[in-house]
Each structure stands twice: as C-alpha cells, then as structure tokens.
Length: 431
Image (tube, rainbow, N blue to C red; front, side, top):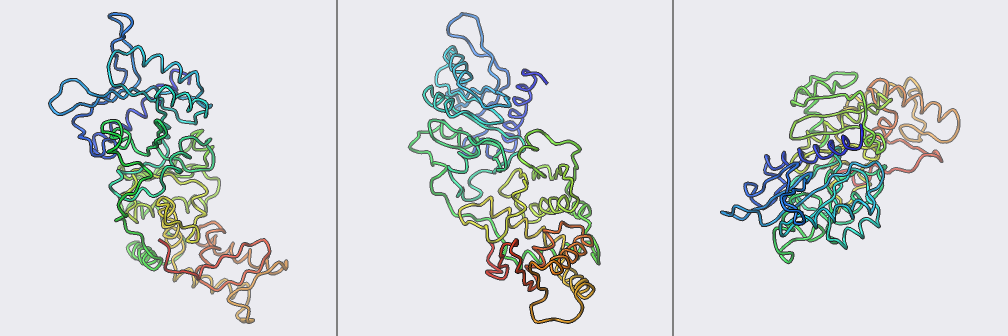
C-alpha cells in the first residue's frame, strides 16, 4: 500500500467513525444538535489567493446555527497515516493550506494513527492547530453523560502522545491549545460554545450511575449462564454462550501491525454485537480472552463503551489493582472476574480440584492447608502437575487456573518466585 492509499484508508476510517456516530446521535455531537452538523469528505473550499481555485480538504465538519444557510464554524481535518511520528513539516504544510482558505472561523486538525513528536505539538499550538490520534482498534467511550469521566486529562494525554506499545489506547484522543478531549462531541462543543461555558475533560462531573457488581453477584451471573447452557462437566462452550446472547464471533486469521505491536488479543463492538479474536498461539489464553470479551457484554458494559480492546495487560488485572478514579480499569477487572467464573464453574472446579488433589497428593491433610507448595523440587513438580490437570480439563491457561484456585481454596504457596496474593481480603469489595 503506497502513501496515498494509506492516507485514504485512515481518511475513510475516520470519516466512517464520524458519520456512524452522527447517525447514532451519540458522542460525535454531545449536546450539539446533529441536524445542524454536516460531515464532508474531499470537499473543496475557495482559495483566497487565486480566484476560481479551490482547495480540497480530507474531512470537514460544518456547524450551523438554527435557520442559517452558511456554517458559522468549519473544522478542517487532514489525515496523515504515517508509521513514524508526525513531524513539524506536516504542521507547517497544513498551516499553509489553512491560510489559503477564505472561510472565516476555521479550526484545523491533523489526524494520525501512531504518535506525534513533541516539537510538532509545540508548533501546532503556536499555529492554533489541533492534533487527533485515531486508533480504529481502540476503546471508544460513549458520551460523557453516561458515566463519570474520572480518568481525566492524564489518560487522554498518554493515549495521544505516547509511543504505541503495551498500553490501551482510546479510539479518539485530541488536543487543542493544551485542552484534551476523549470524544469528538467534547471537541465540537468546545469550539461551538464559549470557552468559559465548556466543562474541561478533567473537571468534575456527575457520579457514575453505572452498576458495578460485587464478587458474589458475578458468581451468580456465571451460574445463571451455566444453567442456561445446561452445563454439566468439562470445558464450557463459549461459542454457545455467544449464540445464546446473540453475539457474532469472528476469529481473525491476520493481525494488523498496530494490534500486533500493542499486543491486542481481542475486540468487542457493542453496537454491532460482535467479538473479534486475534491469533494467540495459546489456546488457553485465547479462551480466556473470548470469555473476557463475552463478560463485557454480560455485564452491560455497552452502556458506557461503544467498543473495547483487550491487551495482554488487561488479563492480569485483579481486585487489588482497582482504582476508584479509573473507570476503564474497573470494567476490565469485572470482566476478568466473570471470565474466570465462566471458564471455571465454581462448584465443579472445587469438585475437580478435590479429585486431582487426592490423586496427586493423597487423601491425608498434613496440616499445612489444602495444598502446600514451596521451593522443594517435589512440591513444585506436584503443584505444576496439579495445575496442568485442572487447566487441561477446563481448557484454560495454568495462570487462570492458579488464580481461581487461590481465590476459592486455602492454598499455602511459600515459593520464593511466587508473589504473595491475598485473595481472601475484601472478598466482596471489587468495584
């Protein structure tokens, strides 16, 4: 794919993102009337230097007042699909383009999928140009009225400016004159209203009305799903769960360069009720990723997310990682807890653990807890064998089996290489 084709692809993706939100009347407009907003692709605007000459703009957003024919505000957008960071020359070039357009009250933005050099950000600020990072695979937040935007400017700034890697990116993140936005609706309202009337993304907002579940409730949700499946034993059929709740499941044969670099394992599109699973190379972890995405649907996370991506780091989050000021992390933790309960049904898991324990350790309890393991070779070997048996039976990774085991049963793990995890503390406080 050449440079022009790559630019067109980013332009197409961003245009479809804007128009789809406008059709849904969701976060693309926020409180601004969608009927008064027009989105164009490849529209030409008069040049103020050469009579009769027009300048083509990748994407433009025109805002009108009620009853007015002409727009009072133009948001003009140039898409740059570069693998490396956007540099100063891109900002200089776009600034020259904007200066030749005769329309008044225009705001310019450069859209990119990767990152932007700090020097380019400084130059954009000087010219009054904004920057937008658009990640087609990223997490898309529904309008801020849905829940408290408590992660604030730092999260948005990180998503916008950090190099791609092992962090989860927002689908949309933008900056203009040192203000940061995580929805196009916030950005439009920022320009469409007086700045003094605009509520900063980091400002106070109403408390979340979204429901977070305690651990017992999550176990009950899982038990209800197992009952509907008529689950008896063995591996839980995750494809059947998708069928039961009307989710389309897609296993992707190839993974995009971005998804690979960011270690994206799966995606959920709530509006389309679709789950995408990328190649893992590990069947147990792939099943956990799928259970994790299913859990987002079962926990109604579509109320606050339009789309969601799962990266490797998400699957390691547990109750101890909860932060009252990080809504996204709390959603991931809840999805992990339900995924564990779905894959490893509580009662049957304890039943099989008892069975394998007798086979491997014998029936006698030696007073060191349900299972005792330390650095002695025979102890570590037996425990490894025990986890393998559980994992093979339920079709999960050893890590998932170990975490579930330690949450449900009194495992005495004294290995120096094993971090201490107190799963019995705050058992019902995970939100």
